[in-house]
Structures are given as structure tokens and as C-alpha cells.
Image (cartoon, rainbow, N blue to C red; front, side, top):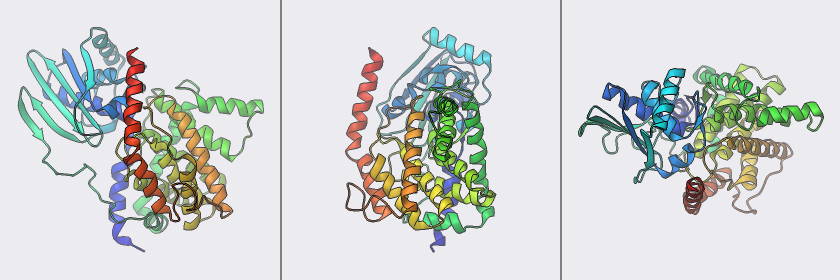
Length: 429
């Protein structure tokens, strides 16, 4: 057992599993605006924001919490007018109705613009606030809260040193394997990982909010109604889908509750959390077993996502759900073989589901991925998996993960560009 990686695993989870209020791409821009406002010292008269194409893709169709309004311009505006620059991904947690009204007034007066930044960074957001002949520009890159530059009236107030922090992670999973992740989650002292139970608390509260049927596509509430009508069975799979999708409904629909995110995404955090929570309840798991299952799920999701671009054409809810499959398999059978079989079957099932931007329909992909996870686990319980003789799946789980991620880093880069072109053309018509 390789325990040398355990400190890095702890750092990875504490970095990548964090509360986030709203879709993290517009929230990243809101954070840049909030920091710029603090440096400017007065309310802005104009906001000029620029983001990378991938951040534009993920921000143009999602509701910003507390505003009832979709898109990046409102995020930039309310972030500048009432965001908390010290709150990270919860920058908009203290919005008031007055701030929202003022932000919408800025949009109506065409005082806010958001364009594409010509930068190499896949994840990039900058906000320039102007007032009284002065201006401040704040740039965030590579991670949703990683400030890399602050300028005021042409003077550089802060600039991240080249190479400092590398990609902004602050940890390294180099040399780690899926087996290392499993061994850590199932044997590390409970006191070291008990904090992961916060993921269950936050995402379950979001799920309960979504069940009101007032958010997004209200898929969770719709599925529950079909149970009451007799069109769906009230079985474990249905409960997994209802509880998971209702959390995503609420998050994408602008609920003012935080999600526990994973790898910078609330939906990934939901996908890695709620299926595990539901199955843990079904088997009567105690807090220790739930904590270990959640740690296995979230860390496996981080491990897989670490091989992907920060934003890509591959829907990362699918990879987060591979983490959920690991957690569920351990709860139901308790061995590594079931975990590895389930992940391989998921790669053989839902590889290539595209990310076409953050939107209410993300809850559909949460549902699809949760179904795939549950199905793959049921197969593993009977010692059945998609084998290394089929498609991109290899004989081992790590090689299978590498093959999936090679697609996202290779040919799917062109897919990503075409998705963005289609979305921009659609929204310019």
C-alpha cells in the first residue's frame, strides 16, 4: 500500500471539493469583478469583461444565483456591485435585491460588455472596472479562483510569478493509480477524512430545494410525480435519479444555496455525492462508511478529471459519476475488483457525451450518468464488465481512464471548437 501519496490526496480533496454558489464559470467572472471593485474603491460606471471561449460556453446559458437572469454580463455586474472578494466560489452569497436591481440597470444601460479573450488559457476570466477616469483590471486563469494579475491605471499591483503554483493546484497526483485512491479512501484514519461528510449535507440540502419543482427543468420533481402516478417504480435507481437531478435542477436554476463542488464544478460535486448518499441510506451505512464511500467517490473523480483539460468537450459529470460508481460498488460489495469493473463499464457506456455549456439541461446529463453508474455497479456485482477487447476500454482500469482522457485531450478539442461555434452562431441569430 502506497501511503506516501496520502498527504497529496488530502490536499487534492481540500482544494478540489469546496462549496460553490452557482455555476463556477460565471462565478469566476463575478469574483474577478468583486476583487476589481475593492481595488477601484468606488462603484463602476462601466464593466468590460473578457473570457476564454470555454468559459463563454459554460457561462452563456446558466442562471446566476439570486438574480433570475442568465449569462455572464449579470455575473460581472452583481459581482462588482455586491460580491464578496474574499469568499471565493461563494462570492455572491450576500447579494441583496438592491444590488441585483442595480446590476440589471447597468445591463439595460449597456454599461456591461463581455467578449472573447485571445488567450491560451482554457479557463480565463478578466474584468475591467472603470469610474471617474480610473480603471482596475483583474485576471483569473487556470483555476476558478486563481488571480494571476491585478492592474490599476496601468500599474501592476499584483502578478503571479511565472510557474509559481504551476496550474494553481498546490498538489500533485503524479504516479497515483486508481488502486491507490481506493486504498486511501478505505483505510485512512476516519478523522483525516470526516470533513467529506459536508458534501452530503450541502448537496442533500440543494436536492431538497430542487424537489420544490421551481428550478431549471425540474426533472427531479417531474420524476417523483411519475412515481406517484405509477409510471416509475419507487426503487433505488429512481431515488438515485430523483435526488441527484433535483440538486442539479436547483443549482442550474439559480437557487441561492451552495453546492459542494468537485474539480471546480457543482454538478460534478452533485454527481459524485448524491448517488452515494442515497445508496448509503439504503444499506443503512453509518457515518464512517458514508465518509469512506464519499471520499472514494470524490477522490476518484478528482483523479480522473486531473487527466482532462480544465474545461473540454467531454461532459465531466460522466467522469464524476465514475467516482460515484466506485463509491456505490464499495458500499454494495466492498472490494476493489467491483470498483474497477464498474468504472471500465462506464467508459464503455457513456464515453463521448459532450459538454455544450452549463445550462438547465446539465441535470439531464446528471441523470444519464447516474443511471450508467448504477447499471455498471449491478454488472460488477455479477462479475461482468466491458472488457479490454471492446472499444476504447483496456484490460485495466487505469489504462481505460487514460484512453478516455486521451480522447478529450486530442480529437475532442476540435469537437469543442465546433460546439462553441454552433453556440455562438445560434445566439447571434
